[in-house]
Length: 395
Image (cartoon, rainbow, N blue to C red; front, side):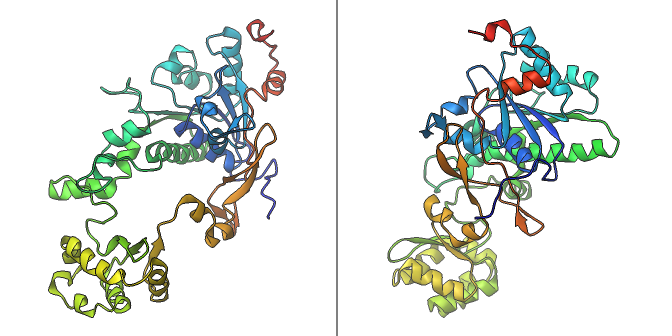
Protein backbone atom coordinates (compact mmCIF):
# COMPACT_ATOMS: atom_id res chain seq x y z
CA UNK A 1 0.00 0.00 0.00
CA UNK A 2 1.24 3.46 -0.90
CA UNK A 3 2.51 5.58 1.99
CA UNK A 4 -0.24 8.19 2.34
CA UNK A 5 1.37 10.10 5.21
CA UNK A 6 1.82 13.69 4.04
CA UNK A 7 4.98 15.64 4.71
CA UNK A 8 4.68 18.76 6.83
CA UNK A 9 4.90 20.94 3.72
CA UNK A 10 2.77 18.93 1.30
CA UNK A 11 -0.55 19.92 -0.21
CA UNK A 12 -1.79 23.02 -2.05
CA UNK A 13 -2.90 24.61 1.24
CA UNK A 14 0.39 23.96 3.04
CA UNK A 15 1.23 26.93 5.27
CA UNK A 16 -2.41 27.92 5.75
CA UNK A 17 -3.53 27.96 9.37
CA UNK A 18 -7.17 27.33 10.29
CA UNK A 19 -8.98 27.61 13.61
CA UNK A 20 -12.18 25.58 13.73
CA UNK A 21 -15.00 26.30 16.21
CA UNK A 22 -17.28 23.53 14.94
CA UNK A 23 -19.18 20.45 16.05
CA UNK A 24 -20.88 17.41 14.49
CA UNK A 25 -20.82 17.47 10.66
CA UNK A 26 -20.98 20.51 8.33
CA UNK A 27 -18.19 22.57 9.91
CA UNK A 28 -15.91 19.66 10.81
CA UNK A 29 -16.28 18.31 7.25
CA UNK A 30 -15.15 21.70 5.91
CA UNK A 31 -12.18 21.73 8.28
CA UNK A 32 -11.25 18.18 7.28
CA UNK A 33 -11.25 19.09 3.59
CA UNK A 34 -8.87 21.97 4.29
CA UNK A 35 -6.64 19.67 6.36
CA UNK A 36 -6.63 17.06 3.58
CA UNK A 37 -5.17 19.70 1.27
CA UNK A 38 -2.39 20.56 3.67
CA UNK A 39 -3.77 23.27 5.97
CA UNK A 40 -2.93 23.13 9.67
CA UNK A 41 -6.30 22.93 11.43
CA UNK A 42 -6.68 23.58 15.16
CA UNK A 43 -10.03 22.35 16.44
CA UNK A 44 -11.28 24.29 19.46
CA UNK A 45 -13.74 22.11 21.36
CA UNK A 46 -15.83 22.71 24.46
CA UNK A 47 -14.52 21.06 27.61
CA UNK A 48 -16.85 18.08 27.07
CA UNK A 49 -15.74 17.78 23.46
CA UNK A 50 -17.46 17.84 20.09
CA UNK A 51 -20.80 16.07 20.49
CA UNK A 52 -19.87 13.73 17.64
CA UNK A 53 -17.29 12.12 19.93
CA UNK A 54 -20.16 10.31 21.67
CA UNK A 55 -21.66 8.86 18.48
CA UNK A 56 -21.24 5.11 17.97
CA UNK A 57 -19.55 3.00 16.82
CA UNK A 58 -17.12 3.49 19.71
CA UNK A 59 -13.89 1.48 19.50
CA UNK A 60 -11.12 1.72 22.04
CA UNK A 61 -12.99 4.59 23.67
CA UNK A 62 -13.16 6.72 20.51
CA UNK A 63 -15.92 7.35 18.00
CA UNK A 64 -15.36 6.16 14.44
CA UNK A 65 -17.91 8.77 13.30
CA UNK A 66 -15.84 11.54 14.89
CA UNK A 67 -12.62 10.14 13.46
CA UNK A 68 -14.09 10.09 9.95
CA UNK A 69 -14.63 13.89 9.96
CA UNK A 70 -11.70 15.15 12.02
CA UNK A 71 -8.57 13.57 10.63
CA UNK A 72 -5.41 15.60 10.46
CA UNK A 73 -6.48 18.18 13.06
CA UNK A 74 -5.14 19.30 16.42
CA UNK A 75 -7.50 19.55 19.40
CA UNK A 76 -7.67 21.88 22.36
CA UNK A 77 -10.62 22.06 24.76
CA UNK A 78 -11.48 25.55 25.95
CA UNK A 79 -14.21 27.17 28.02
CA UNK A 80 -14.88 30.24 25.89
CA UNK A 81 -16.78 31.89 28.74
CA UNK A 82 -13.50 31.94 30.67
CA UNK A 83 -11.46 35.11 30.06
CA UNK A 84 -8.14 33.22 29.96
CA UNK A 85 -9.42 30.61 27.51
CA UNK A 86 -11.09 33.24 25.34
CA UNK A 87 -7.83 35.20 25.14
CA UNK A 88 -6.01 32.02 24.10
CA UNK A 89 -8.66 31.43 21.42
CA UNK A 90 -8.17 35.00 20.19
CA UNK A 91 -4.41 34.49 20.04
CA UNK A 92 -4.91 31.34 17.96
CA UNK A 93 -7.24 33.19 15.60
CA UNK A 94 -4.87 36.14 15.18
CA UNK A 95 -2.14 33.69 14.22
CA UNK A 96 -4.41 32.00 11.64
CA UNK A 97 -5.48 32.66 8.08
CA UNK A 98 -8.97 31.17 8.42
CA UNK A 99 -11.66 30.85 11.08
CA UNK A 100 -14.50 28.37 10.56
CA UNK A 101 -17.51 28.21 12.89
CA UNK A 102 -20.91 26.52 12.75
CA UNK A 103 -22.67 27.96 15.77
CA UNK A 104 -26.07 29.66 15.70
CA UNK A 105 -25.82 33.27 14.55
CA UNK A 106 -24.89 35.55 17.45
CA UNK A 107 -23.02 32.97 19.53
CA UNK A 108 -19.53 33.98 18.40
CA UNK A 109 -20.37 37.66 18.82
CA UNK A 110 -21.50 37.07 22.42
CA UNK A 111 -18.22 35.28 23.08
CA UNK A 112 -16.21 38.19 21.73
CA UNK A 113 -15.00 36.12 18.78
CA UNK A 114 -17.41 37.33 16.10
CA UNK A 115 -16.75 38.93 12.76
CA UNK A 116 -17.06 42.43 14.20
CA UNK A 117 -14.01 41.73 16.37
CA UNK A 118 -12.10 39.72 13.77
CA UNK A 119 -12.37 42.17 10.87
CA UNK A 120 -10.76 44.96 12.89
CA UNK A 121 -8.27 42.73 14.69
CA UNK A 122 -7.05 40.98 11.52
CA UNK A 123 -8.34 42.41 8.21
CA UNK A 124 -6.75 39.59 6.18
CA UNK A 125 -8.65 36.88 8.05
CA UNK A 126 -11.06 34.69 6.10
CA UNK A 127 -13.97 34.17 8.50
CA UNK A 128 -16.49 31.47 7.54
CA UNK A 129 -19.83 30.99 9.32
CA UNK A 130 -21.93 27.89 8.58
CA UNK A 131 -25.47 27.87 9.94
CA UNK A 132 -28.91 26.47 9.22
CA UNK A 133 -30.44 29.55 7.57
CA UNK A 134 -27.71 32.17 7.37
CA UNK A 135 -26.56 35.13 9.44
CA UNK A 136 -29.52 37.40 8.62
CA UNK A 137 -33.18 37.20 7.68
CA UNK A 138 -36.42 36.02 9.34
CA UNK A 139 -35.16 32.49 10.07
CA UNK A 140 -31.55 33.29 10.94
CA UNK A 141 -31.93 32.48 14.63
CA UNK A 142 -33.34 29.01 13.99
CA UNK A 143 -31.18 25.96 14.43
CA UNK A 144 -31.21 23.03 12.09
CA UNK A 145 -29.85 19.59 11.41
CA UNK A 146 -29.46 17.71 8.15
CA UNK A 147 -32.97 16.21 8.39
CA UNK A 148 -34.76 19.51 8.95
CA UNK A 149 -32.79 21.27 6.22
CA UNK A 150 -33.53 18.49 3.72
CA UNK A 151 -37.19 18.95 4.65
CA UNK A 152 -37.16 22.76 4.42
CA UNK A 153 -35.16 22.90 1.17
CA UNK A 154 -37.41 20.52 -0.76
CA UNK A 155 -35.20 17.42 -0.91
CA UNK A 156 -37.66 15.24 1.00
CA UNK A 157 -40.47 16.23 -1.36
CA UNK A 158 -38.72 14.47 -4.26
CA UNK A 159 -37.18 11.53 -2.37
CA UNK A 160 -38.89 8.15 -2.18
CA UNK A 161 -41.65 6.33 -4.00
CA UNK A 162 -44.59 8.33 -5.44
CA UNK A 163 -47.11 7.13 -2.86
CA UNK A 164 -44.67 6.68 0.02
CA UNK A 165 -43.97 8.66 3.18
CA UNK A 166 -41.51 11.57 3.04
CA UNK A 167 -37.93 10.30 3.08
CA UNK A 168 -34.58 11.98 3.54
CA UNK A 169 -31.60 11.10 1.42
CA UNK A 170 -29.72 8.22 3.06
CA UNK A 171 -26.52 10.27 3.39
CA UNK A 172 -26.40 13.73 5.03
CA UNK A 173 -26.36 15.77 1.82
CA UNK A 174 -27.28 19.07 3.51
CA UNK A 175 -24.44 18.83 6.04
CA UNK A 176 -21.78 17.87 3.55
CA UNK A 177 -22.96 20.18 0.78
CA UNK A 178 -22.60 23.10 3.17
CA UNK A 179 -19.12 21.90 4.12
CA UNK A 180 -18.12 21.63 0.48
CA UNK A 181 -19.41 25.11 -0.39
CA UNK A 182 -17.62 26.48 2.68
CA UNK A 183 -14.28 24.87 1.78
CA UNK A 184 -14.54 26.08 -1.82
CA UNK A 185 -15.44 29.60 -0.73
CA UNK A 186 -12.59 29.69 1.79
CA UNK A 187 -10.10 28.58 -0.86
CA UNK A 188 -11.44 31.27 -3.23
CA UNK A 189 -11.10 33.97 -0.57
CA UNK A 190 -7.57 32.81 0.25
CA UNK A 191 -6.70 33.36 -3.42
CA UNK A 192 -8.03 36.93 -3.07
CA UNK A 193 -5.92 37.51 0.03
CA UNK A 194 -2.83 36.08 -1.67
CA UNK A 195 -3.38 38.50 -4.55
CA UNK A 196 -3.26 41.40 -2.10
CA UNK A 197 -6.96 41.76 -1.34
CA UNK A 198 -8.67 41.76 2.04
CA UNK A 199 -10.11 38.86 3.97
CA UNK A 200 -13.82 38.75 4.55
CA UNK A 201 -16.85 37.05 6.04
CA UNK A 202 -18.33 34.00 4.29
CA UNK A 203 -21.97 33.24 5.16
CA UNK A 204 -22.90 29.62 4.33
CA UNK A 205 -26.58 28.82 4.98
CA UNK A 206 -27.29 25.08 4.78
CA UNK A 207 -30.78 25.95 3.52
CA UNK A 208 -29.32 27.83 0.56
CA UNK A 209 -26.62 25.32 -0.35
CA UNK A 210 -29.16 22.49 -0.29
CA UNK A 211 -31.51 24.44 -2.57
CA UNK A 212 -28.56 25.22 -4.84
CA UNK A 213 -27.77 21.55 -5.54
CA UNK A 214 -31.44 21.09 -6.49
CA UNK A 215 -30.75 23.04 -9.68
CA UNK A 216 -32.56 20.56 -11.94
CA UNK A 217 -35.59 20.54 -9.66
CA UNK A 218 -35.80 24.31 -9.24
CA UNK A 219 -35.35 24.84 -12.98
CA UNK A 220 -38.18 22.37 -13.59
CA UNK A 221 -40.38 24.42 -11.28
CA UNK A 222 -39.38 27.73 -12.87
CA UNK A 223 -39.94 26.32 -16.35
CA UNK A 224 -43.31 24.65 -15.76
CA UNK A 225 -44.79 26.24 -12.65
CA UNK A 226 -45.25 22.73 -11.24
CA UNK A 227 -43.53 21.17 -8.27
CA UNK A 228 -41.24 18.24 -9.11
CA UNK A 229 -42.62 14.98 -7.73
CA UNK A 230 -41.26 11.83 -6.17
CA UNK A 231 -40.27 9.20 -8.73
CA UNK A 232 -38.42 6.63 -6.66
CA UNK A 233 -35.24 5.83 -8.59
CA UNK A 234 -36.72 7.07 -11.89
CA UNK A 235 -35.89 10.28 -13.73
CA UNK A 236 -38.39 12.95 -14.87
CA UNK A 237 -36.83 13.34 -18.33
CA UNK A 238 -34.98 10.09 -19.11
CA UNK A 239 -36.08 6.46 -19.43
CA UNK A 240 -35.19 3.71 -18.96
CA UNK A 241 -33.27 5.32 -16.11
CA UNK A 242 -33.98 3.64 -12.76
CA UNK A 243 -33.69 0.42 -10.76
CA UNK A 244 -35.12 -2.71 -12.37
CA UNK A 245 -35.92 -6.09 -10.89
CA UNK A 246 -34.25 -9.13 -12.45
CA UNK A 247 -34.80 -12.78 -11.58
CA UNK A 248 -32.72 -12.70 -8.41
CA UNK A 249 -32.68 -9.03 -7.39
CA UNK A 250 -32.29 -5.45 -8.53
CA UNK A 251 -29.89 -3.53 -10.73
CA UNK A 252 -29.69 0.04 -12.03
CA UNK A 253 -29.87 0.91 -15.71
CA UNK A 254 -29.37 4.36 -17.25
CA UNK A 255 -30.09 4.74 -20.97
CA UNK A 256 -30.25 8.51 -21.29
CA UNK A 257 -30.36 8.87 -25.08
CA UNK A 258 -31.75 7.16 -28.19
CA UNK A 259 -28.51 5.34 -29.01
CA UNK A 260 -28.40 3.74 -25.57
CA UNK A 261 -32.11 2.97 -25.74
CA UNK A 262 -31.54 1.08 -28.98
CA UNK A 263 -28.70 -0.85 -27.35
CA UNK A 264 -31.00 -1.78 -24.41
CA UNK A 265 -33.55 -3.19 -26.85
CA UNK A 266 -30.86 -5.14 -28.71
CA UNK A 267 -29.46 -6.65 -25.49
CA UNK A 268 -32.90 -7.45 -24.05
CA UNK A 269 -34.28 -8.77 -27.33
CA UNK A 270 -37.12 -6.24 -27.30
CA UNK A 271 -36.73 -4.65 -30.72
CA UNK A 272 -40.49 -4.15 -30.83
CA UNK A 273 -40.18 -1.63 -28.00
CA UNK A 274 -37.65 0.38 -29.96
CA UNK A 275 -40.19 0.62 -32.76
CA UNK A 276 -43.12 1.38 -30.43
CA UNK A 277 -44.26 5.02 -30.95
CA UNK A 278 -44.89 5.39 -27.20
CA UNK A 279 -41.11 5.12 -26.65
CA UNK A 280 -39.80 6.90 -29.73
CA UNK A 281 -38.05 9.75 -27.88
CA UNK A 282 -36.59 10.41 -24.44
CA UNK A 283 -39.54 12.64 -23.61
CA UNK A 284 -42.07 10.00 -24.64
CA UNK A 285 -40.23 7.27 -22.77
CA UNK A 286 -40.16 9.43 -19.63
CA UNK A 287 -43.89 10.15 -19.99
CA UNK A 288 -44.65 6.44 -20.36
CA UNK A 289 -41.99 5.05 -18.07
CA UNK A 290 -44.36 3.07 -15.84
CA UNK A 291 -45.54 1.03 -18.86
CA UNK A 292 -41.97 0.76 -20.14
CA UNK A 293 -40.69 -0.52 -16.80
CA UNK A 294 -43.33 -3.23 -16.69
CA UNK A 295 -42.49 -4.43 -20.18
CA UNK A 296 -38.73 -4.44 -19.53
CA UNK A 297 -39.02 -6.20 -16.17
CA UNK A 298 -41.00 -8.99 -17.80
CA UNK A 299 -37.93 -9.60 -19.93
CA UNK A 300 -35.41 -9.00 -17.14
CA UNK A 301 -37.12 -11.68 -15.03
CA UNK A 302 -35.69 -14.28 -17.40
CA UNK A 303 -32.12 -13.90 -16.07
CA UNK A 304 -30.17 -12.90 -12.98
CA UNK A 305 -29.04 -9.32 -12.39
CA UNK A 306 -25.40 -10.30 -12.87
CA UNK A 307 -26.15 -11.65 -16.33
CA UNK A 308 -27.90 -8.46 -17.40
CA UNK A 309 -25.11 -6.32 -15.96
CA UNK A 310 -22.52 -8.25 -17.95
CA UNK A 311 -24.55 -7.96 -21.16
CA UNK A 312 -25.18 -4.25 -20.75
CA UNK A 313 -21.52 -3.60 -19.92
CA UNK A 314 -20.48 -5.37 -23.11
CA UNK A 315 -22.93 -3.18 -25.05
CA UNK A 316 -21.66 0.03 -23.42
CA UNK A 317 -24.91 0.77 -21.57
CA UNK A 318 -24.32 2.34 -18.13
CA UNK A 319 -25.58 -0.05 -15.46
CA UNK A 320 -24.62 -1.04 -11.94
CA UNK A 321 -25.50 -3.41 -9.13
CA UNK A 322 -27.34 -1.95 -6.14
CA UNK A 323 -24.34 -2.14 -3.84
CA UNK A 324 -24.36 -1.96 -0.08
CA UNK A 325 -21.40 -0.10 1.41
CA UNK A 326 -19.39 -3.29 1.96
CA UNK A 327 -19.68 -4.06 -1.75
CA UNK A 328 -18.94 -0.49 -2.83
CA UNK A 329 -15.83 -0.31 -0.64
CA UNK A 330 -14.53 -3.60 -2.04
CA UNK A 331 -15.16 -2.65 -5.67
CA UNK A 332 -11.96 -3.02 -7.74
CA UNK A 333 -12.24 0.62 -8.76
CA UNK A 334 -12.28 1.70 -5.09
CA UNK A 335 -9.10 -0.31 -4.63
CA UNK A 336 -7.49 1.27 -7.69
CA UNK A 337 -8.40 4.77 -6.47
CA UNK A 338 -6.90 3.93 -3.05
CA UNK A 339 -10.01 5.26 -1.32
CA UNK A 340 -9.73 3.05 1.75
CA UNK A 341 -6.72 3.69 3.96
CA UNK A 342 -5.56 2.53 7.35
CA UNK A 343 -6.42 4.78 10.28
CA UNK A 344 -5.23 4.62 13.87
CA UNK A 345 -7.59 5.89 16.55
CA UNK A 346 -6.13 8.07 19.33
CA UNK A 347 -6.13 5.10 21.72
CA UNK A 348 -4.19 2.97 19.26
CA UNK A 349 -7.10 0.98 17.81
CA UNK A 350 -6.52 0.18 14.14
CA UNK A 351 -9.38 0.79 11.72
CA UNK A 352 -9.94 2.10 8.19
CA UNK A 353 -11.43 5.19 6.60
CA UNK A 354 -12.33 6.60 3.20
CA UNK A 355 -9.79 9.32 2.51
CA UNK A 356 -9.72 12.25 0.09
CA UNK A 357 -11.37 11.06 -3.15
CA UNK A 358 -9.38 13.40 -5.41
CA UNK A 359 -6.20 12.71 -7.34
CA UNK A 360 -3.72 15.51 -8.04
CA UNK A 361 -0.94 15.16 -10.61
CA UNK A 362 -1.72 11.51 -11.21
CA UNK A 363 -1.83 10.35 -7.59
CA UNK A 364 -4.28 10.41 -4.67
CA UNK A 365 -4.01 13.34 -2.28
CA UNK A 366 -1.92 12.13 0.70
CA UNK A 367 -3.73 12.78 3.97
CA UNK A 368 -3.04 12.40 7.66
CA UNK A 369 -5.75 9.94 8.71
CA UNK A 370 -5.23 10.26 12.46
CA UNK A 371 -7.89 12.14 14.44
CA UNK A 372 -7.04 13.87 17.72
CA UNK A 373 -7.95 12.86 21.23
CA UNK A 374 -9.90 15.51 23.10
CA UNK A 375 -7.55 18.30 24.20
CA UNK A 376 -4.57 16.31 22.92
CA UNK A 377 -2.62 19.40 21.87
CA UNK A 378 -3.34 21.67 24.83
CA UNK A 379 0.20 21.72 26.19
CA UNK A 380 1.73 22.28 22.76
CA UNK A 381 -0.60 25.17 21.94
CA UNK A 382 -0.47 26.84 25.35
CA UNK A 383 3.31 26.67 25.27
CA UNK A 384 3.46 28.04 21.73
CA UNK A 385 1.23 30.97 22.58
CA UNK A 386 2.71 31.69 25.99
CA UNK A 387 -0.39 30.78 27.98
CA UNK A 388 -0.45 29.18 31.39
CA UNK A 389 -3.13 26.65 32.25
CA UNK A 390 -6.04 28.58 33.81
CA UNK A 391 -6.87 27.84 37.40
CA UNK A 392 -10.26 26.33 36.60
CA UNK A 393 -8.65 23.62 34.43
CA UNK A 394 -6.39 22.23 37.13
CA UNK A 395 -7.10 19.43 39.55
